[in-house]
Image (spheres, rainbow, N blue to C red):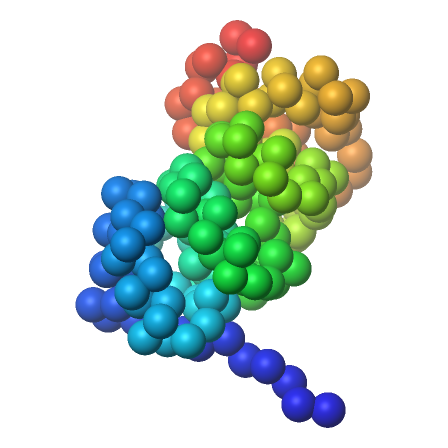
Length: 173
């Protein structure tokens, strides 16, 4: 059985892809996708970034994080693999929650209980939304009966992440 390995880009391509996503520039994205001939591209990040960006990250995940709706939709329509994981086990739901776009959350098979281990503690999309200050998204999840307290032996309370990163709006929520 042949194992598929996504392409990893670095250097100037990393900067180009991030700029495209920040601008939600669909035309430039499609041009680069044609060049690479796949939507499954891992972006190699070399600068210190927040907790989600410790390893190579699928471009689809970054589109979710940057709320690049048009680019995100184009990547989905191109067949991007939504089941990919980072080296830490973080999935698309984590990045979508960190980005805070309800529109993207509604486009995917969002799993608020998707758990990965970060610093030996469970880290879910609820934690990601709290860490990035998305009180509205936490409210959205609460309205859908998601346990946003996540009191378990292996989880840091999401409010700890909100406090650590200075998101008093989440604490007040």
